[in-house]
Length: 78
Image 1 (cartoon, rainbow, N blue to C red):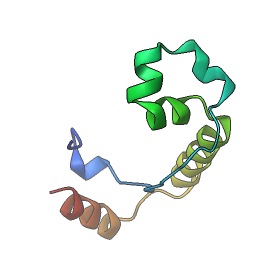
Image 2: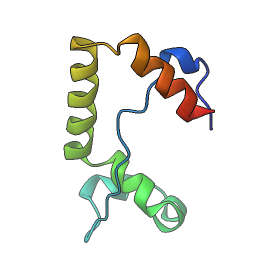
Image 3: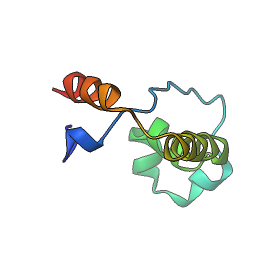
């Protein structure tokens, strides 16, 4: 996967999450999704994860990337 515009995109984090039990909202997904995309559907239903995402985005909006950081992000994506 590549960013549409690498000069305006930066990776804010790379997180590995493991769930001991299924989040309650995950029951809304089909059995197929719950079985084969377990981690993905769990993350989608995890309010704590989305709170972290929101914090990361708000932090970057408050202090945008400097040109050197944007250039480094571009090199890392290639």
